[in-house]
Length: 88
Image: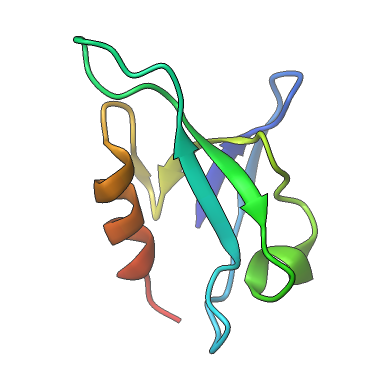
């Protein structure tokens, strides 16, 4: 499961089923500083994959959790590894 913070402050739990086309979105880190990585946002929803089929995840949403793990302080590379290792 993925928890994202929608524009406007709403939290949304989204369970994406990673099929053969993958999760179907890219991420970007914003405003990293000496204190650690900044928030990780959804950059793009790809034309194929679980995110476009679900329809709720949008560009600009902030990712807060992956599979119940709070990702505060997690860098972009580590998050991508977490997403890639999620089960189908």
